[in-house]
Image (tube, rainbow, N blue to C red; front, side, top):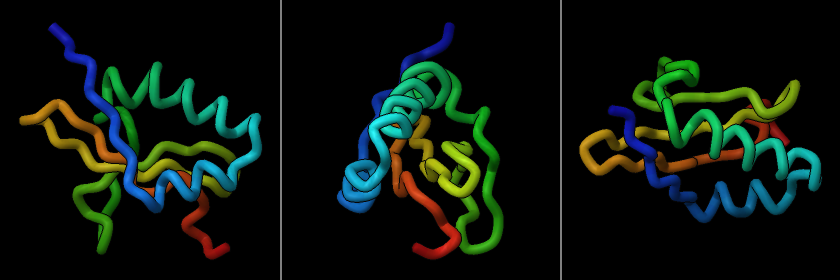
Length: 86
C-alpha cells in the first residue's frame, strides 16, 4: 500500500515559491501533489554536497530540491528555484 507523504517547506523554499511566476507556482503544486507526495523517490537522487536530497525539474533552469523522511512520511522541500545562481 502506498502512503501519501506530508509535504513541508523551509522558509527559503517559501521565499523561492513567492518569486516564481503564477504559471510555475501552479506547475509546482501539481508536481508536488501528483508526484512528490505520492512517490518521492521518483525524483533524481543528488550527489556531492547535496547527497541525500532529490530534485525534480520545474522549468529549464528551476528545480524543486527536497529531502525524504520515510520514517515520518514527510517530504521537506528545501528549494524551489534555480540552483544556477540568481
